[in-house]
Image 1 (cartoon, one colour):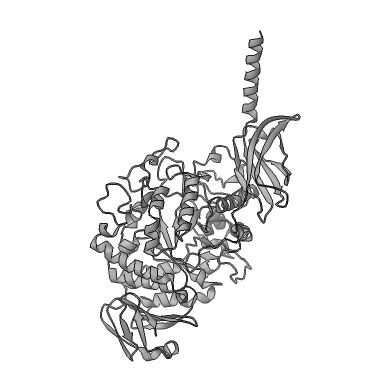
Image 2: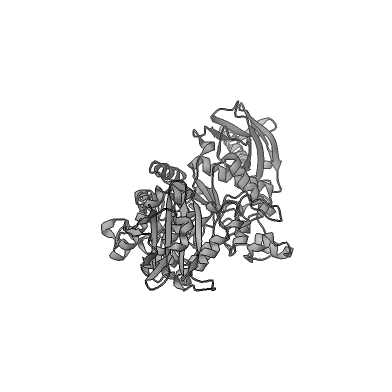
Length: 616
């Protein structure tokens, strides 16, 4: 009889624990000494809203326990008094009738010294964009993971190929020696779906690195190693949408956690509507609330619980991983006021931090609207320091394949006209500039493998205003055709997989074609590292004549003259036009060839060439 009673007691306890069990708390830890003392915990578990929450820890106070429409959630508002609270652990208890039914051990951590004043990426950097699944496979044992339905298949250009965090870590020296100073990796967080997960933009767990890439700790170790080598890390984040496989999609906290429609409704991708004073509300709604894809539910930035959850998530990654910057995907698809709140929250906590937003728009006016402190009649301030300059990308995608003459707007006129609109920007030096990225046509495909045109484009990118970004493989002339699908512009880096016939990570492994690209790229990027005049100097440019674009970067100590000859034939440049900039200079040394050019009245320019002259 006693044994039977004991068994019944155990069964009742187990049943009760199942009812009261905390399944998840996010964020899973926090830090003392944050400027914002407030923290909102998402607590998830079966029927937990029927319980009381208690915490007994010096300096930590429960302000409010918020119940929402789903009884499986509580949102617990805390304040953390940094003058009292100490690093350590405490129990978050679920209680009923004065009795503790379940508890969760929560940790408060100490911040790294100087964390609040961390420096970020600037125009002093060259950003190297890579896709981890396609860069290098450093740990084949994590190619397939039981918890993730999609398995590795390199035969599919849209499948997972096995690249990972270890692959990036193994090649940090390669990136450093190339001359890049910062790494932007497309998202590394979990994408738990059956197919097409390699790109990373359908996140299913915002607090967890995808196990096919490694672990959270692996990511933190990668960043620590990068910092030791003088490299910065920019984390790619997504606020507009999540993944259909997200854990909370099976049990939404509330109906408006995401934007829901009677049937699948895709965004109209009309980002301009967000600031169009004449726009119909249905068009604005479709842009901001339509789903990006069938596997990407649109998140509701106007739900205060979700938005607090998301902002805290970004701050959590900055602290946990020691990030140097954030790149935010699909920026204008979000509610603009919510994004302003997001950027301000990050910058309030980290005043010197940089944030770059994907502003895929095709006029300088539209892009300028999204930069912090922009002047506009809507009196809107995005608080976003750095938009992506897709107008410059548009110009670069065509200008070297056409001839600009007279009044037409082609060739070098495209570059001049783009720079001439810098008056629209609050800070032109805080524009993210690029010839290609993971969503655009491969630049070497655009240029048809023409090395001379590549040299011109890269010379411009590395000497004009802004923060230059290159795409992995550009430095070895990698190609790919977007018309064949995104997978073709996201090919595997040769040498990143055991058994690759070519290893372009090493000098001896590169083909002659790859070597020519790499050597030019590396010399130019490494030269730029020491040139303050290029990174922060003023820019003076001249209207192109005969499809020759001339501009200068200068400060009190140094002047650089850049000449782009977009003609297929040799040209003579008359230098007397540039007296304002040349002043007392007599000659210039080309930074690539180290050849000295006399600044005589006539300067002979090779066909399809770039000269970067350090003036003396």
